[in-house]
Image 1 (cartoon, rainbow, N blue to C red):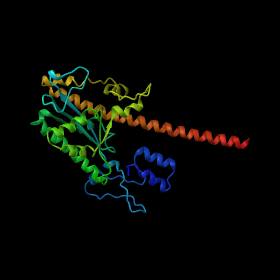
Image 2 (cartoon, rainbow, N blue to C red; image 1 turned 180 degrees about the horizontal axis):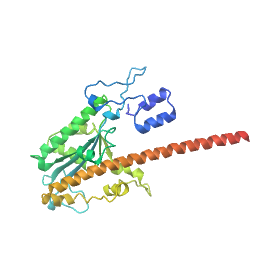
Image 3 (tube, one colour; image 1 turned 180 degrees about the vertical axis):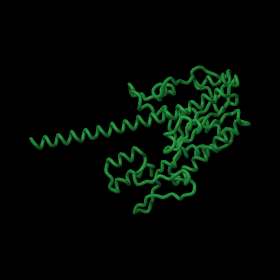
Length: 303
């Protein structure tokens, strides 16, 4: 059973095609109520009852979470190779520097001030911990706490979202390899833990918002996204962090990483706005086609 089975329920309950389409766009049915964050742990989950043996868990946006994250890495000079991603989580000479995390409530936290946004971004960097392992345990505990809250709120049927740019090929696989390397999780437990989350990689999601000239749909780079959705914002390659780390310019690394979380959050909002506009255009086009069909039928009837 998928998280979208409520659409079939709506059909069975007699909702119109237009109402079902609207529910699909917003992610929940009109009969679902929102539950406040203060109730997240204590209030028992209420579900819509059907005349069947099964009751379905609903998606409560107020109880869901989007985790924005961005990590930085250090690679020593002797291991650097031009035009390739050099960091390897199993190479003991390289370092996982940590990064920044922001946990967003999808109902409350996408219409907040810049200051409120900056206050929600949490820095987690190596120089503030005794070791890489201690840093990684803290990251694991943060993620584990969120996934437990979200899953408990939805009878284990809805997962928190981890969101970033390029995270599916860098940050997330690296993080989980490090969990294994430092024996925070076994191989089997790392696999199970990863599947408690759902990933949204904006570099892939954004493909649909660009003009693609051929059938080769390739993920977009961070700077391609920034060029499209922000003004005068561009980040240097992650390799620039290596020099900053060697100079012990930790504040600049932190500032850069927090800025990346800030811009990723805004790219997410812009993409959501784009897709909402696409759906409105699709809806209007469907109405136009139906009107044309009706007019053709009426004209043929007159003839």
